[in-house]
Length: 459
Ligand code: NAD
Image 1 (cartoon, rainbow, N blue to C red):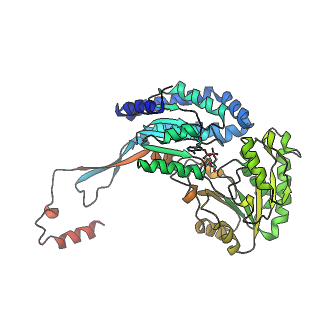
Image 2: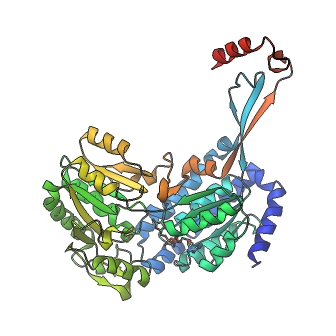
Image 3: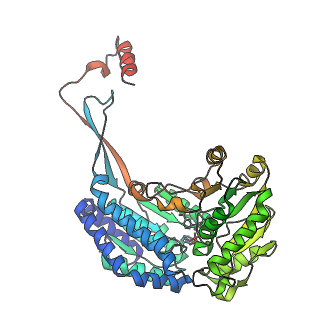
C-alpha cells in the first residue's frame, strides 16, 4: 500500500479528472458495492461474531440490513438527488434562472468507531461515494475481523483512487488527520471528536462529528409498564448496551420505580435467561479494557439486579442500579455497556436538575401516554434526536436526519441528509439578458423611493 500522503495525492488527481462527477459512474460503484456486500453476508456475520460475539440477528437488524436499505435508497434516488434544483428567482436576480448544484466536496476522510463497526464505516462511505467524493476510510482497530472484511470489500469494489480502507489505530488516525482534506466525517467519542475538530480547523475543513453522551430515558406513571420494560430491555441491551443512542439512564416517577424494576428484571430474564453469560444473544464488551472500565463504574453503585462480571471473558451481565448519586462513577461518564441506572423524580424540577447536569445528549427518550408531558419534554430539552415510547427506533427511518448537538456532535446524515452532508450546495444565478432595469445603477439620485417600493413588493 502507498503511504498516506501518496494515497491522498492520487485521489486528488483522480478527483480533478471529473470522473466522480459522472452519475452513471457513481451508480456503477454503488451497485458493485452492494453486490460485494451481499456476497459477503455470512462473512460479515462471522466477523462481528468473532469481534465481540455479536449475534447474526443483531448484525442483520443493526448493521447489514440498514446498509443494504441505504444502498437501495441511494441507487433508486441518486439521479433525482444529484440533479441541479431550480429555485425561484428573487427581485435582485430577476430576470434569472436560479439553481442549486450539488457539488462533491472532493477528498473525504471517514473515521469509524468499533461499536457498530460495519454500519458506521460503510454508511458514510455510501453517501460520500453517492455525492461524488473520493474516500479514505479508517475502520476501528478494535474490531479487527470486521475491519479486515471492510478493507477486502472496499478493495474489491473501488479503484484506490476512489476509495480505500486504511487500517490502523491512533498513530494512523493521527497521520490521516495531519493531511488536508475537503471533508472529515468522524464517529466516535467526545474527547477524540475534539482532536478531530482541532485538526480540521487547521485547514478550515468542514466536519461532521457523530459523538456520544449520557442519553436519558424519562418514564412517567401513565405508561403501560410491561410494554415499556419490554422495549427498554431490547433497546438497552442490544449490542450489550454499546450503542451511542442507548438509554444511558432512566428517570422514572418515584411511585412506580419498584414495580418497574421488578417488571424489567422479568423481561431481562425472558430475553437472556437466568444466566445471561450462556445466552447466545448477548454480545460481549469490545475488550477487557472497556469491561474493566464498566466494572469500575459499578464499584460504588447499588446493584439491584445482575452485576456479574468476568473481565477475562469481556462479560458484563445486564445490570440495574438503584438511584445512584449524580456524582457517582456510573453517573459521571457515558456508560456504553449493559448497565442501567434508575433515578427517580417527583416534579419537573427534579427532571431538569438531572438532565441539565449533563452536556446535551445524543438522544432522549420519553415513555408516557400524556401527550402534553411528551410535547413539553421534547421542546424543553436540547438533544440530537429520540423516540417516544421506545428506544433507538428513530435511527431506522432514513427520512429522519441523525446527528447530535453541542458535545454530542455536529452535522447529520442518513438517507438524503447523508447525500446532502457530503455535497456542497453551489448556488448559481443564470442571468437573463432580455432586460436590464436601470434602478441599481448610479447615479442613484431619485431612485431610492422606487427601490424601497420594489423591496416591499417582492418581499
Ligand atoms: P473513539 O473515539 O475511541 O474511536 C473512534 C475512532 O477514532 C477510531 O477509529 C479510533 O482509531 C480513532 N481514534 C482514537 N483515538 C484517536 C486519536 N487520539 N486521534 C485520532 N483518532 C483516534 O470511539 P470508540 O471507542 O470507537 O466509540 C465509542 C464512542 O463513539 C462512544 O462515545 C459513542 O457514543 C460514540 N459513538 C457515536 C455514534 C454516533 O453516531 N453519534 C455512533 C457510535 C459511537
